[in-house]
Image 1 (cartoon, protein in one colour):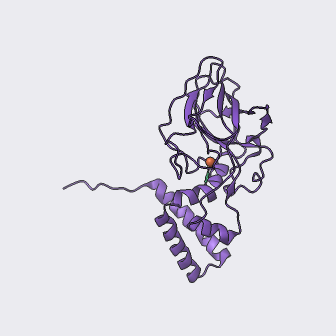
Image 2: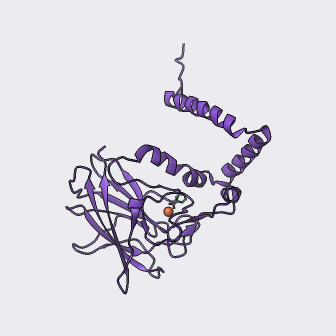
Image 3: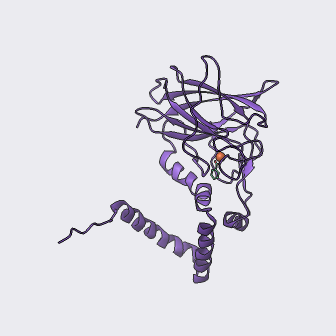
Length: 260
Ligand code: BEZ
Ligand code: FE
């Protein structure tokens, strides 16, 4: 007889059973009625069909997943990966003592930013040769490869820290922007009386041997949207100063990676 192939996944079963246990308590407390359930199913159907499910999840759920995993852990707090990361960014090269230059158009608009950082381990060791992936929006608030005319890898790239864990990259100051608000996600924002803005941020991902990958964001003091970020991605330790240096801006932040 042919052997039965089972797709049973014990983790799925465990998580779903726990989810239902908590949903039962939640339903009692919320006193949800059948019409509200039907409204929810129709809205969730529109959300899926519109392609906004990853956006919705990253705006309203991802921060809670991260907080449950990392609050009070040593090392730099992670922040949202978000829906605008793509694989395959170009490797950037720089002469010794020169900054890396994030991929950009010849006529890229915006304020020039020199961003510096250092990467170390929770044990204090400097993490040289750490892979740093960086991506951000442009002066129009757009991410390349999403709703933008820019080349696919514009304002995206990766590079490696020097032997002391240091790096410097020349880029543009990112801008606050509105998440898409004309579809089912926007409909939900209206129900919640919540604006669609995110504060300006750089996205960074660090990978190095023996350590957990660190995915985080960097924000800037004085940004109007820090306290009410629609996606609740801001963590105090990820907010840095944007210094004015006449012709350009400068900012820096150090990052500490947890052991794997
Ligand atoms: C972002 O960081 O760009 C982002 C994160 C969550 C939802 C939408 C955007
Ligand atoms: Fe972003």
